[in-house]
Structures are given as structure tokens and as C-alpha cells.
Image: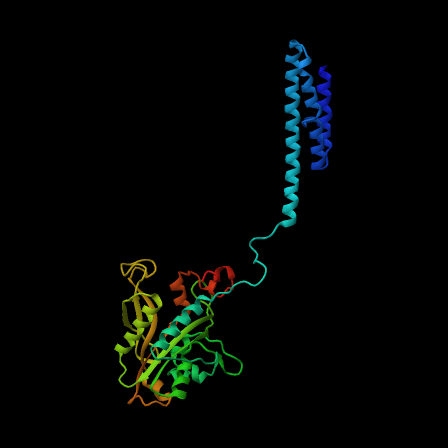
Length: 340
């Protein structure tokens, strides 16, 4: 058995591997050379006919040829497999960041979740849920709330005025005015809804946000009633008992007026960045309804009294869910909103 036979087999088979354009052609060339009935197997059968001296040299060459062919076959096979994988990826590639096809399950907006909870809570306490127009008259939005045209309190609210003299409501307090005028005392009501102010947008301010304001008008209403309902509200929202305090605050439609603070729920009053190391977080304005507000709605303040409060639903949702940028609630990013 001349060495040239093995050398020629290696050359011819390597050429067949290199020229193979498909996996099937490569496999056919492998079977011809390396198969059970292939050329190399036939040469191995004749190996016993050689003399001991020939066996050493031919055996060494035989193993070398077999290793070379097997290595070349595996390399070309890998090339075909990689090309096939690339073809499949190109044809089957999808952008996993895109929404899946078909209808997607929806979820409630975090502000809606908070509003629903508050509405359920106050309904259980005998309060009515009232709604009003978002485009309001100056009289309902300011005048009837003891804020006449030249009152400095108007400067506290940057307002969107319309060409017809109306405005986008700056708070939901006009709904309280409508409730007092249409329903009269005794009255328990809350007014959730969207409000508008010409704010410069940043992480904590938006031109469009949500509030809930409420009031109770009845005989013998005191600050004690106000504190009770506010503690009930906040305990229901945060699902735990909260400690509150009142600080004097000025609001034209209440007298006396208060800023209601809660003991910081993050540090439990010991001081942290959230409460600015004071132990308290300012949460909502409130107070006893101003006699002028009652008179402007046709209610005798000598006979009736009440309390009122206002709470930012947007800020409350941020506190409840640990949202650090108010713009996330208005951006419409479904990846963010689907967490709730």
C-alpha cells in the first residue's frame, strides 16, 4: 500500500469538503472517505497484509489523514450550522421590547386606584361623591370661595384663562360651591377630579394634576370632627394608623385654617430626607368653612358650620407607590403603568 494512496485520498477529500455548497454535499463527501464502507475503511482492512516495518509508517500516516479529514469535516459542518442559524435569526428575529400582538390586559392608573379607595372610604362614611365641570366660571372658582378679583390669594394660583372669561378650574372647590347651592345643608361630600395650573413642569410639578376636596356642613361641626375624618382618611389610604398635627395656615375659604402634617411614614418621626429631617410631612390644607363662603352659597353661618379639606391625589399616589417623578404619571408609558 503506497503512501501516495493516503496522500491522494486526503487531498481529494479536503477538496471535496471545501467545494461543498450544502450540508448534504459535505455529508456525501464524508461518507465516501470516512464512512463505514468508505475509502479509509477499505484501506484499514488491508492494513494486516503489510509487513511489520510498513505497518509503523503507514499506520502513522493513516491516523494523520483520518484526523485531518475529521477536523476539516467538523470545521465545514460548523460553518454550515452557523450560516443556518444566522439565516433563521434573520427570518425569525423579533423585537422583544415591542408589545405582543393581540389584545393586552389592561390595568388601572395609580391615581385611579387611589381615587377609587378614597371614594369607597368616604361613601362608607356617608359622604356623596360629586363632580363638576373642568371649565369653570370666575364666580364659582374664586368669588364664591371668598377670593374676590383683587384678593392677593389669586396670585397663588397661575390660571389658564379662556377668551370668553371662563377658566380651567384651579381646584375642585367649585364643586363644593355647587353642592352647597344645589343640595343645601346638612351636607357631606367629596369632589375628586382633574385641575389645571400654569405651572413650570419638573419632577414635582405638573400643569395638569388630580385633587380630591371634601366638606361637611352641619350643626355643631368642630375641629375635632375635622381631625377624626382626616385621620380616618389617611389611615385608610396608608393602611396603618397615622399621627397627625395641625399648624396654622391661611386659606381664604376657611377660618381658622390649618396645614395638616403626618408623622413621616419612612422614618417614623426620627428624621430623614423625605421629611427634611423634621419628622413630619406636610400633606393637606384644611379648616372650618369661612362664614363668607357659607353666606355666598345661601347658608346661614349662625345656624350651620362645617369643615373643608383638599388633598392632591397625584402627590398621594407618589407617596403611596414611591414614585419620584410626577411626569411618569402623565407620560403614558405602558411599561411604567402596567406595574400597578
